[in-house]
Amino acid sequence: MPLVPAPCETAAFPCEAAASPTEAATSAHLYQRQMDQQRREQLILQHLPLVKHVIGRMIGELPEYVDVENLESAGVLGLVEAANKFDPSRNAQFKTFAYIRIRGAIVDELRRNSPLPQHVLARIALVRRAYRSLPAPVTVAALAAATGLSEDEVADTLAAERFSRMVSWEQTRESGGPDPLAPAAAPYEDSEREEVLQHLSEAIESLPPKERLAVTLYYREDLRLREISAVMGLSPSRISRLLSKALFELGEKLRHRLGYDPSECSPSWSCDLAAPNLCD
Image 1 (cartoon, rainbow, N blue to C red):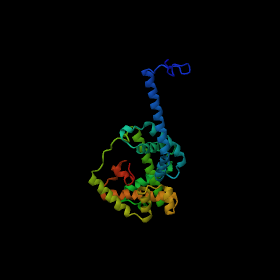
Image 2: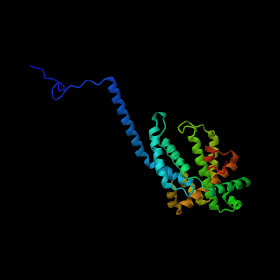
Image 3: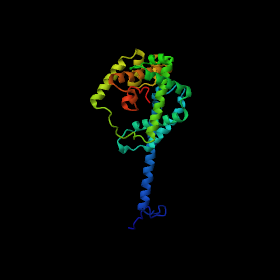
Image 4: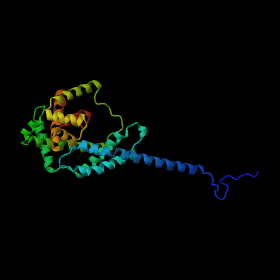
């Protein structure tokens, strides 16, 4: 019985030479690149809502004149950068890594296109001078009386001051600060941290009802300003001022109870916990 040729030995199926080790390695490399690209695209698509979430959380830290709509594209670019640079082997969650990159990209956009106007800088200087002349704990009402500004104007100035320090801190981090994924040294022992949190909880409970509710919804319930506005029946700008007043006075109460020196305040857990106040 004659042997039937294998399909590749017929005219219809000509045999192909086996791939060389180099060609096989190249194919494997291309396949891996395609898989990596698909993984990055999937990460980006899955986390696009995170961009709006980050912006929504930052609105309370931004002066009223900032055009929030212009920040979304910067946030998306930050998300793309995060997807390109993410290394799963470092045992970090992508959402955490992306949050930092998105926020940094937004702050960079703010630094380029939203400098503080001169009249706002003048008010910050005025409020800082008044702050240093007042006995602790300083209140927004005391700052208003000392500067001749309204309490709302003081609240807006405090928000602008926090914004300016937020931008400065992000710039410091980007120009050689610590790796966002590197383990951070704990500024407090567990017992000290518990003491701070206990004082913070007591300070929150002592706030006026509207300020206490705004802080609870913003920080504990993770709601955005528009959502808090709907819950409380107040405008987003009013909510922003309530938060600004509350954060300032929480910081003052903590410093007064724990013996902080305002001149020692820096962008760290101890200060950011209850909003850093008027620090150089």
